[in-house]
Length: 474
Image 1 (cartoon, rainbow, N blue to C red):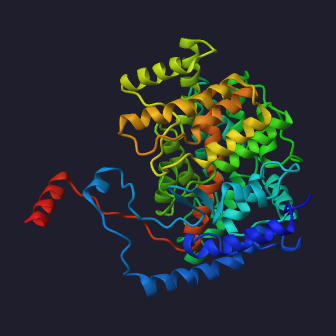
Image 2 (spheres, rainbow, N blue to C red):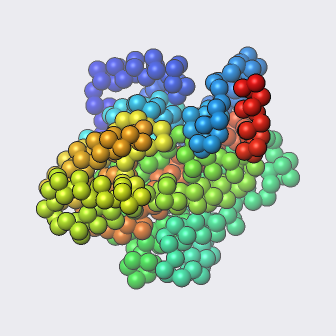
Image 3 (tube, helix red, strand yellow):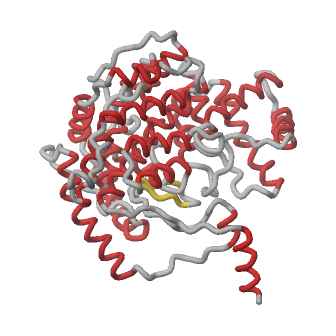
């Protein structure tokens, strides 16, 4: 399969990314490699010393450069707008959206290898990009898929740990339990410091744990949790001839080729959203204590499970269905406006709209909309989502309290999954967690490779703030 759509397009994209790399701090180059460069770990072994030297130079030459002013509003407002973390794998721009190693979502869709012609990027390709900053060849992605499959055995105690929970436990609780159970056999559970390992090599056992976790949709009971809760415990065996996303969909019980493409899209667009969000920040923070990678990711998952973060994607579908339940399937624009106002006046938010950083429509929403227009344009729920796009932003703007009235990634994903039969909204955050393991895990490897320190930000009391403000005003 052709890796690029055409030499002219590649040339233009290379030129653009090369220009953007210096300002975005993202990918340093787009490099086509020979089919012999198939080993991901050897790629990292070459890159890491360069980046370690780069960080040392940055600290020695620019360590005292100020990055901005901190205001009381920032301290009281969840540290929004406060630069305070190094996150190499992605960068979020308020107007442009997310860039993965310098590549926007549309750019990434053009250059990453796919399973079918003009299809969605393969998650394995994005994993390679996040770790190396290089766009992989299809041969490299296929080799990585095979390597992941070779690591996909699951210890029996993982299933036993999940089975110890009531089947009614939330899917995220069961998912996190499976992740915690995997830590028992982790190479990192014995402190690298007590084993005499050089700090510069701490990334290597972290890399092994990431590839083990991402090796198979069954690696921590991901598909098992779904089948246990919603399908009477009847599991489906893995098909390791499939790519990661397709295998995951297959083990859940969905083999429609369009659903396989949706799973590839879903996983890749949810992988990473820079380091300031709750799940990414939590995984990074816990990892800074040299906690085991599985413990770090389990902590991240517990943050993702909050209704103001990853749980929001299940809330969107439930809210949309509540609209239909009250107004009927042929909802008019006026009825929809009335329901939105009713939601807001009831002290609730309209789920799927607004974002802590973005100030325009989320590009992750846009690419899902394009997928829907291609594969399910007549779906009633999709048509309702489209109508909400017209109705909700003007209302939120009229309120005058919302900085971003536009839809985010959660506004669309549940409707797509529901169309292909995955209608159990309680499971949607698990899908988010599956995706986020790629981004958080990739950055954790770089945290260890660069020797980033234990995080210890300064906290203050309200009394301290009051006294400080009085001194400044005097």
